[in-house]
Length: 112
Length: 112
Length: 112
Length: 112
Image (spheres, each protein chain N blue to C red):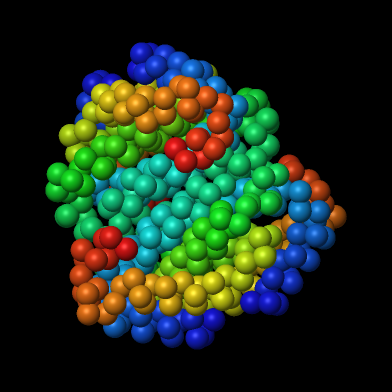
């Protein structure tokens, strides 16, 4: 992760793209990329989405990379470590959704 | 990252949430979380978005965690490593946006 | 539609909200509202989404209203009539997806 | 609006696309189209977004049409009239954001 952050900083600096990279703009870019990812699944059934063909899988991988890149760029601009904060969030969720209440429940899940 | 994947698998298994976690549904959840992140910036100017107050920053961190969690869950379901694929994408982008042509150019960036 | 535009202009003017309503910001707001709408469907199966219960239907109606409002506001700021342009788009699509080729085809649809 | 609904029903029926048009799928499609609209503004400043050039404006019009089409399709599937419900929502908002409190206030707006 640290290496990815370094590479992304370099990449943007070399191209003088810092001026475009306000957190607001990066959050927009992130949401545009996520929509391109979602587009790959939009007319598939849930079952089909579990087994995309190779061509689609390659495009999905490409979009996941773009999402990851913008997520890390945005986090870096705000001094947030997305891995560490994800771990913290899981601990919070562990309390919010205790196994005995949440198990297999769509209703609980719906209210997640 | 490997540890995060393990934790997320456990978390979903304990709660029997696998049935909700088709890649299609995870991509939807990802895009809902990204919108909650974007919402934090929506009425800020770009300048304001560079310096969010502590309360907002805490919410942003929370949303970034959710985005990270769903991105990793989705990737795991499709056997994609989001870190490795992000590195590969940067190499592709290096060829697509050579420094001499892309430097400081909003036009290039617009067409990214 | 004309009446809706008038009402929305008045509403924003009375509250002096014009300064927040750049097309960029309105497009962000639109995408945040659409995500809140999508959230209502995220853990439902396609079948369930055809028959939401009354409580969910009320929330959906609320979100559809918000989407409509921001779509009309954004269009108005750019002097676009969303109804007229929708009609024009349908005529374009009629040529792009001729009945004999598109009929019942997920493949065609996927490439829409 | 009534005419648009009729045309869209016909269009989908002729092509036998009803099976793809669950509300869940239409909400996904709507959010993908909104992201394509947002993409047009993503690297513009707010000021630039008020005066897009003709080429961009044509693309924006195209995307607004797609958003309108999916919004009306989705509403129709759930027997919701998006115009009527938008009017109702404005009345609700009138109470929620009284002029004297909301006027010019980013803070109020932020909490909208």
